[in-house]
Image (cartoon, rainbow, N blue to C red; front, side, top):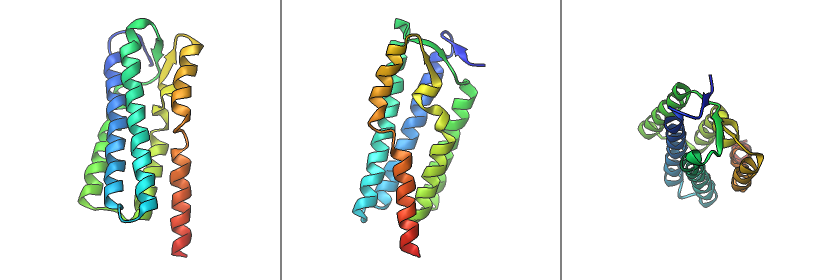
Amino acid sequence: MPDSIGLGTQDILDVCQSVEMACAELYHYFAELFKEDRETFRLWLKTALEEENHSRQYALIAKLRSKNVIESIQLELLDAEIALLYVRSLIDRVKQHPPGQLEALRIAIDLEQKLDGFLVEKVVLFSDPSHERSFKAIDNSDSRHVEALQEAYQRKLAQLR
């Protein structure tokens, strides 16, 4: 059941913020792993910075919580915690067994698809449409990173043929 504003809201937002930062950590790791390939390095760095931006959005929403900006949270704390554990275990796994470029892209695409429900507009129900529009405007500049990962995957796959 979604959480109306009250106990647990801060926790959910904090965990969502941590999920986004964990994704950023993974993508920074991939950037370092593939730093010799300039194009791939830039893709991973851009994606990591976008995840950091998502994390900052959750931090801002948490700060605005007391100003009646949020009507409710559409995510269970347990689901957020499970997602965080999943991303952290994924980081541990790829650090133990570093993937190749194609596999790293596939991992990231799968992760982004699994975490689709963590987008701010899917987690937070704003009390006023103007608040929602403001956060969508912030996010619009980096909403294409899944498509960019998929395009890079297709390019790398074509290079192997």
